Length: 145
Image (cartoon, one colour):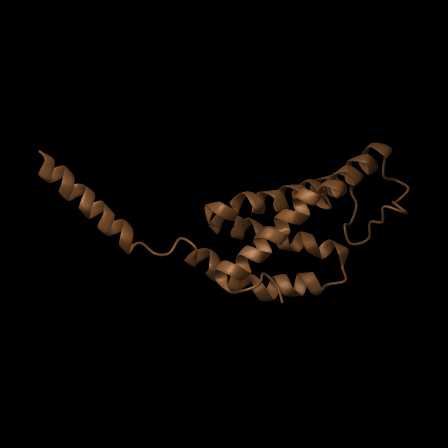
């Protein structure tokens, strides 16, 4: 009875050893999206950051476990800000916290400001730094140039 169990364990270990690198798909996605992310980062349009969210979601899905939580910490505050702006009917490219449109309610302004604080929070900033450093260290490719 032990021999079939031992054989099964050895076969399992052999198959696992032959599997591809778990970061390979992630690193390919980083390389595939680098130009788009570079263009977004270079844009003077403040709303361009939201154009990166679908790419960020894809990278989060493909990310190794050790960096997936950091991706979530980047994406979730951005999605919350996008939702707050959308709820207020505000174009992210033209919204100014100093001079918000007159038709934006006080409640919507507060929601936008709260979401913006989360995007600029130490947690979000550190998470973004971590995903950028991870892409460079593990993939040998920065997220953007």
